[in-house]
Image (tube, rainbow, N blue to C red; front, top):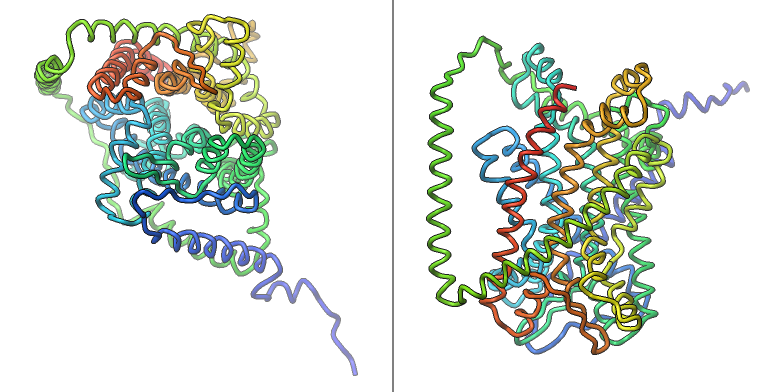
Length: 574
């Protein structure tokens, strides 16, 4: 009897599944099972006058880590949706831009605890007696810590789209929807992904505040690493805090590999240097499957009709008549409307405010705001001198950025409030001046906004511009002046604005430090708000937050907005 020779290639060609399909299927089932099991815990009832129990046994940490990262991912998805809607609208509509961007400037300076305390009651009233209300409040607080830098990043990227890209879209007669999906969004994705990583990392700083919600009658502790750290801190368990930090480190590494690894792999399609592009092991495993490859091909062909819509009418380019008078008239009317609205709002707010606080208190609060502004300005200048050269060096070396970005992500996720007791000990032991030595704490957790955006801006410099600058044999100073600084400036300004907003937020914790019965206070608007909160002086607390928002809004409108306009227009001409 003759047998045909066994051909493995022939069999594998017609095989419906292989071992890689089983691995991917197991990962998908495990993920859905974990999410379903976690969501099933949301129906726990809240009992008044009773605190939810948090176990400090390290065996509970995997469950707590999964619950924390699940809240962050939900907040990140909401942030992406918000960014795609309002960031795009602000970049494309000049009238919406004049409303959305100032609102983002104000909201990013409002303390996260202000959002949490205000919205917690609303969510609990909407879901009475259920833990879902507390979960929604925690997710919303995390959302507010993630969304603003992502919105500004997408807005800045679309605004700085080079003129050659616009000309290309007009040449191929792309509709506005096609232009956004096929040109603007891919152009903005590198910077947006970097800010997504930073948002996910920075939200670890707020897990304690978001997972431990205090009310007058009871305290809600949601299962998570933040509540675990708070419980360990209350009991003085240093070993438990170490376990929590290790679990946080493992969670960051895993989430970076499973979530952002495939994203960086996808971004490699837009890099001209394919050899240095990032390769995700998860994508490589998926590409070795048979069954899931077929499903992926089907989904790709299905969504390609959405991504490359052929049924949409193409935008016919015709000579446009620019009605200068009409446009100037609309701008004038809109400006008058803004000024009148602002004046009416200020008059009403002043009348209401002076009924509860004195004019002298307002002046003192403005003076304290100036002290905090000085600290933030000095710290930002120091961070720029340090991180701009380092960020450019990393961004110009793709192989270096592959391992430095995860390291920086871990550093950005470290809860800097755990460093505050150490600073308190040093200030007390060596009799240091707190007006000076608390200043680094303000910028310690927000400096990474500058570094991440500088790296993203440097990586986005076109290769032809690098080759042109190299062919001109420019000096190092000329290279920075003619290429590096103009190219990274839009991203750098985004990093500065978000870092400054985070620094104003962090001043509330950094300027008023308590540890082991010792209190370190530095003069500033942050300590003013914290002291007003401790003494239940809600009117003074509202005054402090209002003055802080006014400082942020004035600085952004008078300084950063003109610089944004100048740099985006100059980058378009590159």
